[in-house]
Length: 163
Length: 408
Ligand SMILES: Cc1cc2nc3c(=O)[nH]c(=O)nc-3n(C[C@H](O)[C@H](O)[C@H](O)COP(=O)(O)OP(=O)(O)OC[C@H]3O[C@@H](n4cnc5c(N)ncnc54)[C@H](O)[C@@H]3O)c2cc1C
Ligand code: SF4
Ligand code: SF4
Image (cartoon, rainbow over all chains, first blue to last red; front, top):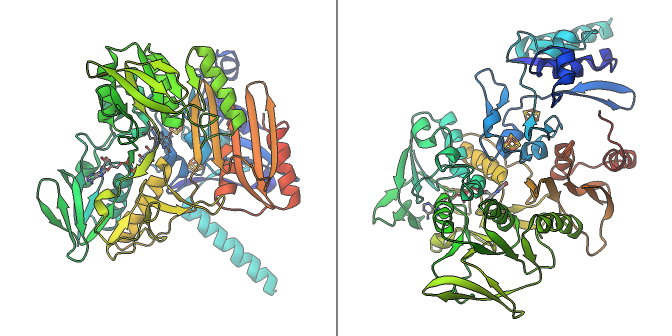
């Protein structure tokens, strides 16, 4: 499975990812149309600041996802790529998923009365947030590839310590 | 190994899914007594005003068919745990290797206490069947009295109001939604419901359902007041479905006592969903579950452990609710009120929104959000997992919630 990996030390908090997320989920996928839409699209990731560190907070598409467990309508489901998706027509806007997500990444779209969350941009190869990040703080990586990279990093750090 | 599941709802479905992950081939049987099992129970109020049909609230995939289990439309009436045997209403007896009790809850019917409660036109709202019957009956009704102003009562009231009935809710307590809100939030919601045109009577007790020609006609209250009603809905609470387990030898207090693997006190018998009891992480009290998500989690853990896997029940709360009432989101978790002054409480109201946080020393133990939802899950999770918070974190949290939240 592919993950979106956030390197917090690279994030400037410029919010490009948030804007591109909105644009991607607009009826016509461009900024000006998105702004003029009667109900402007809601973003599905959130730049947050903790002390000096800024970072985007995104859906983890968790195993045994708390949001899916809480959804009382069957609107939330896991697709064949392991992504937790939501069927618009089933959502009643009960906000149980918002109450259940420990990362706070489900948002309420009060205008259209449905919950919105990351759908990993089904129309794109690379999600809009990843593609747009000017500092490459967001990367789309393979889960196995990532753990290999991390192991090598640790090994490297270990050997440089030994020297 | 043969698996037997009693119950045809979300805890059963969740367990069946988990069993299938571990044992694709084993024989699994499901005994369910509803005519049509496996549907989204919290959606039954939507049948009352016709905004959803019965077909639309069924699980998209029928679990026994998709997961390969035999479904028996029958009712379990007894468990002989020594012989590993259950008895069914039809007279059939079934052997089991491992048994899961997922029979959920049943509405309290007040049959003995309230004269007239057995008359035509008195309903509960717990099953799809109840909802279909109410829908049929209401076509001949103009007025309805709902006894009980809890979540189910209010959901029924809103749906019946949308269906065009004149609605009166009778609540014993001083406020509606006693288990899901504090008095401030409950009064704000009551105000909005009243302004739409519903009648809500609090601190009122029902004394008798008066009938004419065998059908419900009037509800008489202890105060002497009378409420005209062509139909009465009893929404006074739910109790775990455990009567059929009397001779099974299980340890039962408020609900079935289980360990972290959902095993009961009797070997090879597991339980999950609305009939178990567990420790509420907010205040340490022993409670019976009544939440969809708790049934999903406990069902999954039971199914996994029954079929040789390893899992533990995650920390749970008895209140971790979210719903939209009178056009406002109401999200509440953990301890909601502090009559004894045990906790540090922060509350703020502004326009249509109200927020409250309750701390027990260094832990967040309760929250209420009315009219807003932002990051609710983050706070609910701090409560559920009993995460200790340093002073600076607590202050930051209060600022975040009470002041402008640092998110645009
Ligand atoms: C109107 C309404 C609104 C709700 N809204 C919410 C909400 O917004 N959020 C939330 O979290 N929860 C909500 N709930 C509660 C939620 O529906 C329950 O917590 C959940 O359904 C529990 O699932 P369960 O599988 O444990 O039991 P149940 O859903 O009660 O199912 C038990 C099943 O077992 C069957 N059964 C019982 N005894 C036997 C027997 N002896 N033999 C064979 N079969 C038997 C029953 O017929 C039933 O099909 C709501 C409930 C209602 C009624
Ligand atoms: S919305 Fe939250 S709970 Fe659901 S998968 Fe994403 S991170 Fe997990
Ligand atoms: S808001 Fe929609 S997606 Fe979320 S739990 Fe309710 S029905 Fe499911």
